[in-house]
Image (cartoon, rainbow, N blue to C red; front, side, top):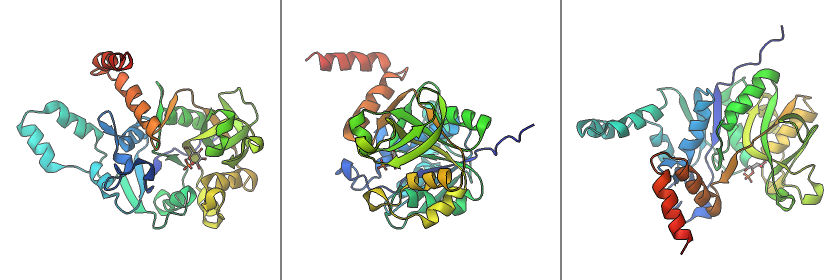
Length: 296
Ligand code: G1P
């Protein structure tokens, strides 16, 4: 019987970005702490990883990001006050969301050299095992969480995986774009990838959405990776190395839900609309208010 692939236990969250597109909101607060309804963006992404069975959460942070660490820590005084005031619901939400002691790690990206460099900063904590990588700006909204679908595919075939979804052809220069063996298939082998190509150079219209499963050899490639698009060390370039130089399998897993780029104002507003409408406690009054606002 073929050996089943190593379990994906750890997930990396690069959270060092400055959030300049959200100034002044992000002057003193990390962009990952902006709220979509009543949960910070980073909490939604950690929720997705937890739902997929991730047990260790690795945050690559930077200066001014200390509040993210506090968010994932116990707040003893707050919990005591909530208990004293009989706020059981709020208390149980906090307790449910709290990772167990030792389940989180924080390391700092000391210089803003690009996403690939941020991931490389997690090498000692991840060690020699495959891991998930989730880009916190991109909220993946769907019935089956994106990473759960990817881990299912990974458990069948092993290797490396990237979630993909189509973008309009004139948008390819904003994303990593992959070429695949079978563009119609739900899970297909990747044949090539390129970071931020002009439409004429794009191998397809399938973009890398910001959810990955990567083999640990990626760290050796990142170590030597030269700066690419935007003069930054790009994860996509190192991933191409896994595919072409290491001859590892790389799969594209189609994501069928909606993606909200919470690094952009419009994406962030739309995420609040979608998540608000999906909430049982808010949906009906929120819909009524939205309709009222739209009819003005
Ligand atoms: C990063 C990746 C890119 C991917 C994108 C998804 O780019 O490098 O391949 O398509 O995230 O959001 P960034 O948005 O950091 O420029």
